[in-house]
Image (cartoon, rainbow, N blue to C red; front, side, top):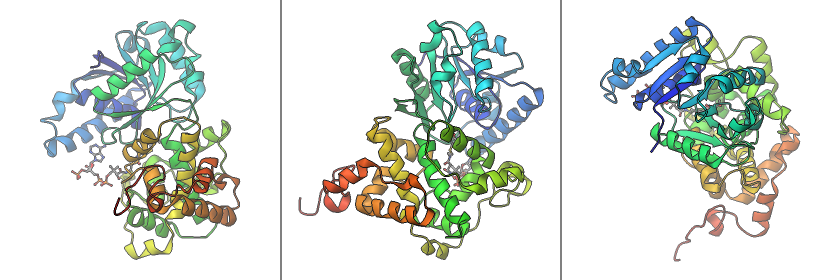
Length: 401
Ligand code: CAA
């Protein structure tokens, strides 16, 4: 049971306004802050649009009852002063986060939890902008887009984060109707963005190098793998600039990846995805339009080539004890709406086939990041191949057992 009554959300962009909406939907009082009134006004009209959708479906009685729990402010200090829990969702730049957290240090109540929704910056570094006694109260609380629909919250421990803060954040996630997973080590990109980046970047490299057309890849992702959005469709949805920033921030902190050149090229050309009306696909009026993809295109791409790099990353996270097997699978099911966990995909294809696919990618794309993780090689040597051998990441009963 969470003791949080008032939440202060910093940043009224896509994630900030979505988080404010979720909290208000769950009966909490919210103050939403941004630096310009027009950002706050834009956010409130998007919240209203989303709540109206929920009211049309009968999920809530009316949008106005929920909206009245959200106050807006241009004054960070006063917004912070009466909050039990602060969630910062400002732009992904360390100097902005540092400025915000040092101001929170002076204005927030000593017992308030100070969470950041960063997707790729280090929690430990953010916590170092507050005075030493407060650092235990700083934590990562990473939501997924759109926050009102996506069930997952990654709870990320920094070097100083106390167990009490983890507990309070888990409780708040539960009160918000979300499912938390624990990221024990503050690695760049945490669980979901690391796995997702491997998958999206591989799809993008395949298109860039002319191995497949993007429509073929997206059809294979949607119809072959059963994922809710194709790789290029999801990239447009997230925003090409956001994706480019995430990948660059992870690389800057040691994540080994050959970034697909299409992202930076599109960014310079202002093709940012849904928000600019054009990304890999056209989205007239900056409204997301689901691309129409012919089912027959799916057969042109071997889907294991897209899944294998994501499995490889997940194997690294498990081997390094960043998160548990179950939390990693839960994270991709609820953070990306995959129909099954990434280890479940691995077990159904077979660990040996995943390794083979990584070798094929290494040859076709010439990137070292496709080197199979030692955990996969060890599993293959031990005959732990997945469903076909009865044991992989999970145990399976074979017929007659
Ligand atoms: N508010 C209220 N309702 C919404 C909504 C919102 N913001 N967005 C979508 N919906 C509703 C729609 O109105 C629709 O309702 P009905 O079924 O009653 O018509 C329903 O949700 C489904 O939406 P759509 O029909 O438009 O499209 P869909 O079936 O493809 O579902 C989706 C949309 C849930 C977003 C789905 O495509 C999906 O799960 N995509 C993957 C999203 C994903 O991977 N997100 C994570 C990105 S990574 C990230 O966020 C981390 C980061 O740091 C960048």
